[in-house]
Image (cartoon, rainbow, N blue to C red; front, side, top):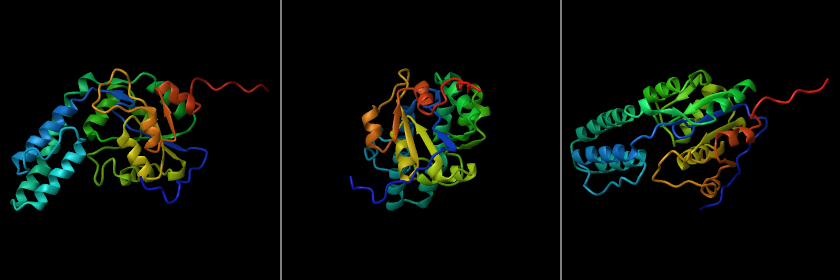
Length: 249
């Protein structure tokens, strides 16, 4: 890995915290394997050579590779446009099936209440659709904590593009050097470090199953400034665990 030319400049105190949603604050047990297989099947239907796309890749990379092959091929342009229009609907439909089983991750409400009481501005940056993200926040009673949310349904780039995080922070009116992004996946670390924004990793909840093993070492190697084992641990690291002690007068 090439060395960074200039280290990011972080300032204290923090003013805003942006969270990933699924896996970080809520647990939904998405069928990501089925999503990937469905996107690959659709891409092959529109002309991508069978076997060129791997179901072990994240969905956004499968889509990027499929679009690149369709653009480079001699197939009608309509194939690319139909693929671009149809794959989000397939993913959204599978994603919606997970909403009824979505639950809050232990410690989320206490963490968010502590941050809100301390005056932090809070936002969500997620690769979920707008419908799923809003529905999950309502179902888990976390919606009141988040006046700011950017999903994959928003116009413009989506996570892990650094611009997605930068656009959300502009909306929140939080300077990059006073912001923190929190997530449970290496894609979250990639997004934050590319945007030169402080990142804290949260280890996946033991109840979650994933094709990718993420541990503290991998988070730190990806640029995390700190790693928390769970949300109560993150609350302690951010000094919002429980009521603040009274000052003797």
